[in-house]
Length: 231
Picture 1 (cartoon, one colour):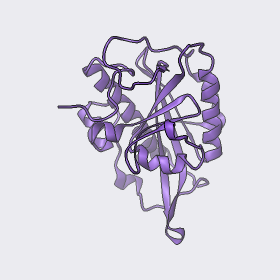
Picture 2 (cartoon, helix red, strand yellow):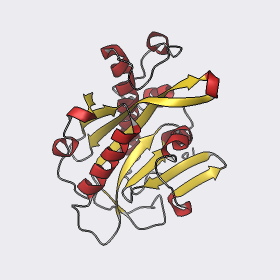
Picture 3 (cartoon, helix red, strand yellow):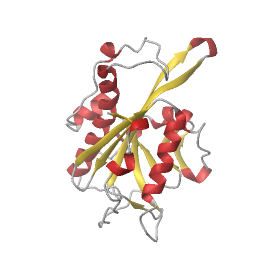
Picture 4 (spheres, one colour):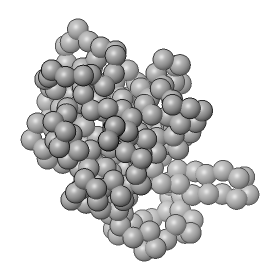
């Protein structure tokens, strides 16, 4: 996992190309195109009892090439400023594509409703950019005109660990006891290689599980359902 402050993310990503459309029932009614790079995003937070609130101390973002089925890179940042700068770089990266439809990168977030509480403080979501199945249950959210967040928890109705196991992800969630959730961490807290690996595995596992599920059902980003599949 690479520190975003010392990484040229756009140089690491492949030339943006659109996922070919296929016959089948679209997951969404609006017209948009998706790029061949799928990603997954997660944050870790520390609870501050004195203010009855939590603060983010690290975010991690994995990028995967659907065309080659290979992980490209996972980057992390320690501040929201770094996050905003990264999103703007992604917007510039995707804008290279000329298309009649809006072009988006799918970004998977396990329990998007939680992350949304933080993301909405730094991006002014419009009503038509958010799809919630009930109050504070966000299934999908668009931001920066090019990032489409999908909640894999609502999609699967499984914990991250169970979702990864169910779809035979190569990476699995590491031990929470070893990570020690009781430890207070902040954006300036030095993190060990093992702690960083714990963070990275969370985004690697959700990407792998989602892709394996798509393959099983012969889906692509246009047809995979947003909500839980009928079984």
